[in-house]
Length: 353
Image (tube, rainbow, N blue to C red; front, side, top):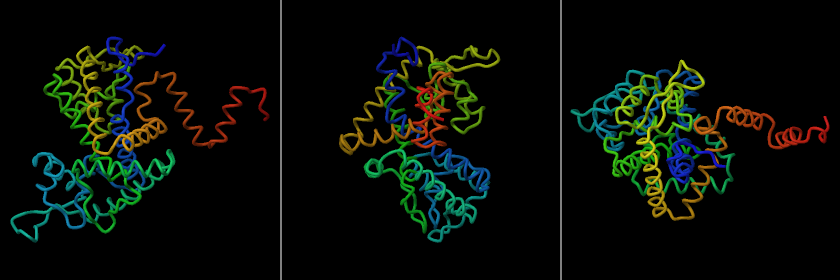
């Protein structure tokens, strides 16, 4: 019997689609690559004070800098929001503001030497992560998917990294193409779902709602996955609770902890978001064609599953440990070694050694 992912009140097809769809796969892969890049830059390259929201600004500055108003318009954010992020980037030492040589009354945000080194190191890390991702699918599938991602970005008029002496997308296509498309998907899904009777939705709600599985989710675990503070997730959870989308319950495995779970209204929201995913899939299909979009979806799904992204959301704890161990053993033993181990575990008396 198929196990219900959420409540039995939600149709089974909606439960399955909620767990397994191209938007979740693309957003999960994007978050994984960005998180891995940031942690590597912190741990191995010594860059300090990094935040995930620095990335689009660093990518868009190029060699000559840019006006903050232009960056805000390109990213579709308010100038106040852009200024707050720019202030944080300046405080971390990666950018500074200088007079615009074309207009002395205006200011440009430009990379400092530390910012240029950060961009260089980021490219190095992104290239390594993409090389590892390439191994998960065939070269033909990967190249086709990159072409489709490029076409989607262009068709949607999404911002691309600014020109610089080293910012060619060759070898780092995923880092250049996925983040802005992921942002578009999040915003479009929020808009479509709000139109189905959920006014007041905010992009930040997705940080919590998408990470609630059958057993709910703890604030600390969600904060760890999203690479944000526990306080930030707590604030979002309070808003969702006030809107009656989630509730807090005592963790059955640890009475000292609380878990967040969807209310019936929250499950209705998820079901409506699934319908929004279907609408978005149809929109993308019209832009790039059914065959190319299907190949992209298959590539994203293969990478998502091979990397074990979000396994801890939908897999029971006792099953999760086995799957994590299996991935570790495959990585250590290689394909042939993993097959030999599998044969030994299934038929131990028929395998020598």
